[in-house]
Length: 107
Image 1 (tube, rainbow, N blue to C red):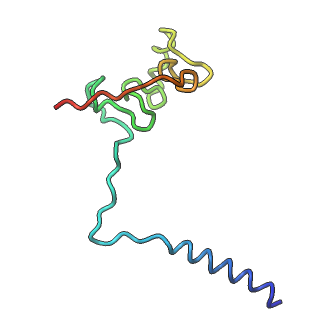
Image 2 (cartoon, rainbow, N blue to C red):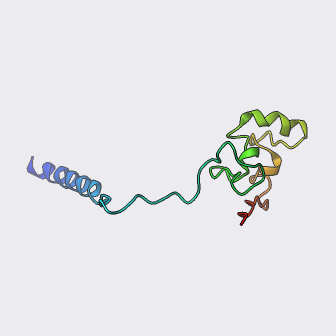
Image 3 (cartoon, one colour):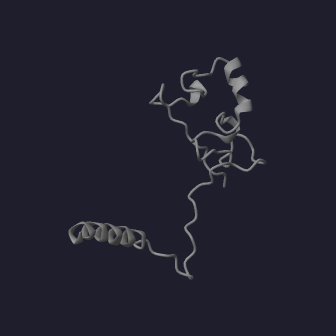
C-alpha cells in the first residue's frame, strides 16, 4: 500500500509545484500592454492605419468575419471564397502569396 501512495504523492507535489511556478505580478509592475488592438474603434476612417482588425489581419471596414453584413457586397462583386467563407481577396489558404498590408501611420 505504501508503494502505491508514493507515485500519488509525487504527482500531487509536481502539480502543486507547477501551479506555483508562475510569478505573481508585483505591485510596482503594470500588466504588459497589448501590441495592437483586436478591433478598430467604430469612428475610424476606412483605409487608415487605425482601420485594422488585429484579430484577422485585414482592414476592419472589410472584415467579414467580424462584420458578416459585409458578405453580400463581396459576393455580389465575385470576390468570395465559398470554401473558406471569406473574400477571395483575403483568403490566404487559396492565395498563400497574398500580402495584406496595414497602411502606415500618418504623421
